[in-house]
Length: 137
Image (cartoon, rainbow, N blue to C red):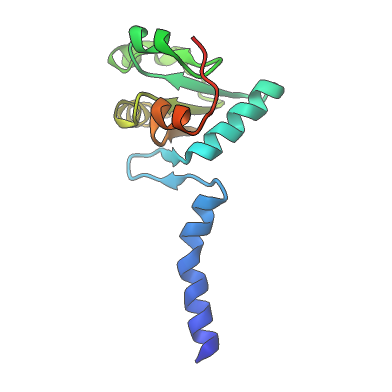
């Protein structure tokens, strides 16, 4: 009985451990939700080397000027459909906005157009700043 109970508890812990270890959570929209620490870790590695990925800021120009993640490419969600060629299909793309709503919409759009390496940064730039991660103007 103890062994069965321990096995069941182990199975219940798998989703928690996957999230805690930085693995994204698959959405039903064809992209993953990237936990903030996971996105930051990849951003930090990219700053220190040339790891092939992109941070895509889908906020407005005004919001971007108020502060953004270093090296992020700005393509506002309102015009993203017209600028898909500027987003690489062969790289991991982390999409973010203010809090996560517009980036979810942008990630869904990218997935609908055949992009497969898309992750929506959970909590957006607000969560990034609250965590104390660097922002530049």
